[in-house]
Length: 356
Image 1 (cartoon, rainbow, N blue to C red):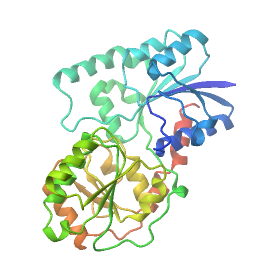
Image 2: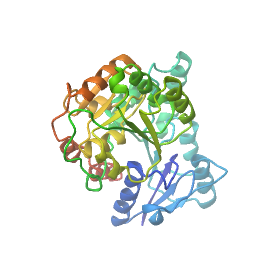
Image 3: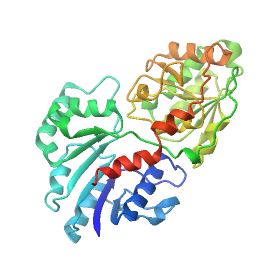
Image 4: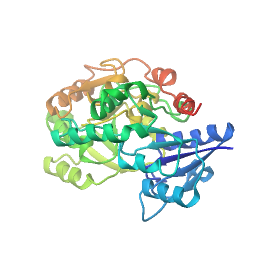
C-alpha cells in the first residue's frame, strides 16, 4: 500500500470545527479509497468528528515538525509524498527531511503576509532561505493567486515552474441558506479568531463613527475566541458600545449560524484565502471585507459584498451606514459562486491530483 505523511501545525479543537477540519477528513477518505495510507502529524490529538478515522501522531512536548522527524528516525517509513500545511516554507526542516526520506515534498502555504510587508532584514532572510532550502520542495501550493505571488516574491521567481494555486473549498450541503435578506437594519456577524491582525478593533472604531440613531440599534455578534479578546472588550467599553457587540465564543456549528444573519464583517489586515468568507457566501450571506490577500479573488464589489481599504475606519463606517439604511444592498444569491468554483470536493480532488 502506498503511504504518505501530512504535517499540519493546526490545533484540533472540538469547539472549533471549520473548513480545514472537513478538508482533512475528506482528503483522508479520498486517499484510503484509492489505496493510500496516511500518517497525520498534528500538534495535539483529538478524535472528534472525522478525526476518529485518521491515523494521528502528536506530541505534547514537541512541535509537529520535530515530532515528524523523530518518527522518521525511529521508524524509517517509506513515504512516497510528504505534505505540509501551516508550516513555514523554506526552512532547515525541509533539508532535515532529506536525511530520512526521498519522498516528494509538497508545501501548502496558508500563511498571510503583513499588511505593510516584511522588514528589509526579513526580506533578505527569506530570499536566502529560498536559495538554500527551496530545492528540497518539489511543489509549492498557494491557497490563492495572491499567495502564489507572495511565495515568488518572498523566496524567488525561480520557483514559478513548481508553484500553483489550489483554492480552499467548503462543503456546500452542510451550510444552511438564508432565504430572505433584510434590506434595512440587517443583522451582522463576525466569525474570526480574535487576534489583532483580524482588525476587529477597526470595526469598533467604525461603529463609533456611525450616526447616533444607528449606534443605538445596530447589533454585531462576534463568533470566535483568541488572545486579543480582552483588548476588544476594553475598547468596546471605552467607546460605550456594549449594546452594539455581543461575544458568542467559539462555535462548532457555524455552518448553521451564518444563515441567521444578513452580512458578515471581516475587517482583516492580513489574509491568504478566507474559509469564513466562502462559508458565509455559501449561506447566501454577503461579506464586507478588506482589500488584502485573496479576498478580491472571491468578493466582487457591490455584487456579492463590499470591499474597503484595510484600517480605513471611516470608509468602513460609510459602508456600514449605507448597508444599514438600505442605500447599498446585495441582491444576488451568493451561494452559486461557491457551489461552482469553491466546493470542498473540488479542493480535495485538486490536492489529490498532486499525488498522481
